[in-house]
Picture 1 (tube, rainbow, N blue to C red):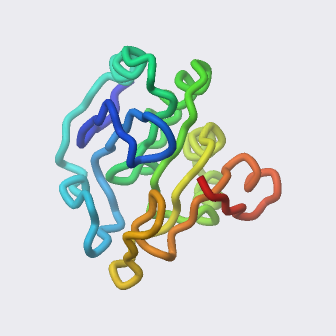
Picture 2: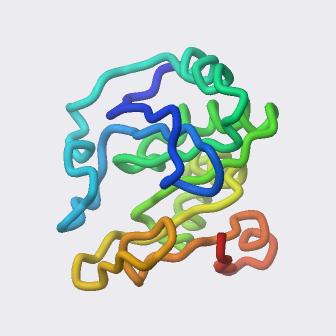
Length: 167
């Protein structure tokens, strides 16, 4: 299976807890003013990569504890993201995603698209919500603006509402 990438970062300490591998997907509908990754917006940009090769690359570093899906908007490519997330979860990785959608929007989307549902249910944590330049803060851990939330996905699905956590 192929995924459209903007890039990969093998050793990240800024995209979630611990040493992480970050998958930057290509394409984003949100176009947030002041976005940290504006080059990832164009759905015609980036390059295609084989999901299994990315997983093999992730496995190369034994210190990698987690994988973060960022972008771009990972939920615009839910099928390859879910494919990778399933294999990575089976290998014991902590999984996280940054999304411009809210948790509530993702729940609605997951009712219409089984791939969104599959991907969402495999994640441990999401940082949700569009980046809002007027609410930008450099004091937030893993988030860019004060409206964004750090959400425990499993507990949120169980309770049927967004459950915020600190990581």
